[in-house]
Length: 351
Image 1 (cartoon, one colour):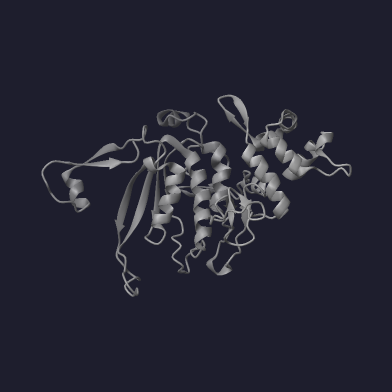
Image 2 (spheres, rainbow, N blue to C red):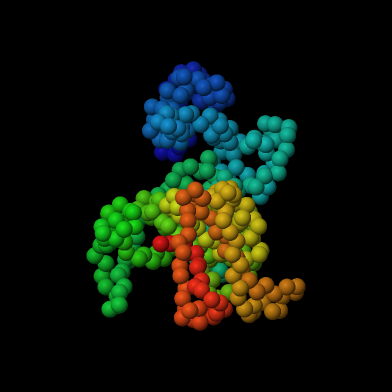
């Protein structure tokens, strides 16, 4: 049963909330919610799923998320079962309410409160991506992000391919890493949709990862035979794509963890704003310029960029730190470093 159907069924248990024809008095319910009506809150708390969706826990106490509940009912009135609040790419709203409801106007990022599956696997497919609104399509989102079964598992080692018999959980290694003893210690390569894969791994690895490196689509609008993802998203689509994935990535990091995001100049500034919102501007510790040969770009109309970037964030700046790594004279030559006196001290992400 869909979330709205469950809500309607539960609310109809109160005779004052229904008409003589057994229809739900939505605007009465909204008014009750705005006034924190005790009977309304009791009905919501009596249903486990409604309790999870419309209440948040703060220091052991449940708090009614009034804005979310009211918006859910209001949008259902205007948009029925649409997956997104907006019929057009830009919605004219203020505080989530349409012009029919208010006279003020605001220009908003239309898909900010959406989940984008990002399921295209081949550039030539030109997949029509679906935006699932976090309020109106709660059931679809729940199903999309539920853990998926991993299939066709294989083991590879120095002797080749073997049949998968189970995960390795090295208690001693986990102890050294400061992780629960039963944490998986195998190196995993997972082929599939990255958003679905991350949510499938969340239960096992949330809060346990020291370093994340991601190389997302640069959204250059170009194409290549080797691309296995969409590299020509519309701008708002790309922002939604990144926001969804950075949100789940953050949950994997340890309190002293780092995330490095590769990007070029095209979406650098917008990515920075989204990442600042998710990780906190105070936790942005650096922008690294990565120099490369401008092969294939020398025919650009204006500039041929010879560098890309890495945005570096920490989960919590109060806990994160780098470890010093000594590079001796022999390694200086290997890395073609200047032969100054003394040893180099480089910073490393991990111990």
